[in-house]
Length: 450
Image 1 (cartoon, rainbow, N blue to C red):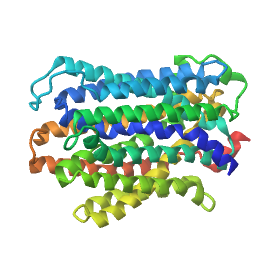
Image 2: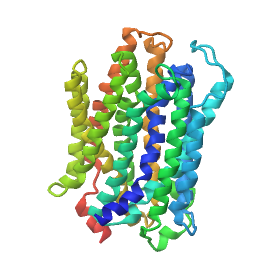
Image 3: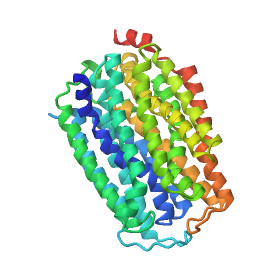
Image 4: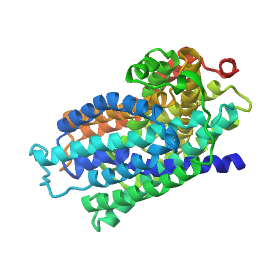
């Protein structure tokens, strides 16, 4: 119980992080296409450009964090800076400062496009400032396998709660806060301000709590100045990190296909936006249960076996949702099954990265915690970008028109296939790669950590 409370103080910041993260990754696309009516080709270019910049920005931030020396330590120094900046940018991103908006997507307001592009990229950058140092702390808190499972599970639990809150509340609060029907610009703005304020307050708790948690330090190479070249070599020469990146990219892309298209699916295909709130509650409940899967089942099964089981559950859940999409009760059952698997696999990813830090220190002589964990952010954003580019391309090619009350059948079919059939295919590929290429099991980690 003592350790649980200790890690709860550390992990609660992810609740605030995921209010911002969830609003960005789940609802921003719909806001841009159906509230600001921006052209999908512009949004495709923006998303791609932002991810190219992330490929440079995230490792640089990881390098900066690993090289930080301050009385607050190299991680805590960045938490409040990143949270405060991200909160401000989140509010600005969901605010139209006065640009002209027209339902004709072919009419381009250059000023609005530039404004959205700047805020979009700034959100990415400020998220990186807090995300990398936060998650980099996990392997530095403990090397004990069971404690590491706990240290990874607790923040993931708060993370899931944050996604549950923003996913369930946004369809209800945006209309209320905007004093209008449906999703509206004032409602988005007011809700973003609230989420940003919560982010700062909750991250302050993490900031204060982590001062009481002693971090592991390693003498020798890990204390040397970290250069960008060294960061690149950390990634290039760590074979298990490369395997992780591919597995996580496949799993996370499937996840973003499901959640990133949910608003379009329930608003435009099902025709009942309120069902999205129920769907999000199911997603949150399933993921919450999934958080327990890894620490509980590892009492009897090997950890990698549990991760494989979780991936299998995710794939079965996705397929079941597609098969039962006309029956919401059956859809809900398969949603819960799938989300238990997704939640457990996400905890597994955090633990995998923590082990990969130790493996990197053993193999390369340098732990490089923040550089390694910067790959988590790159993969998440890369997966979102694959989903977003595919979605905007689908909108452009399928006949989707945000100005229409009823979408053509071609658009409805495209949304359904992308949301419910692409994820199980990607999950199956991730399971295959993990089973064949990931080698860091309990026995290997005992050898590494002595």
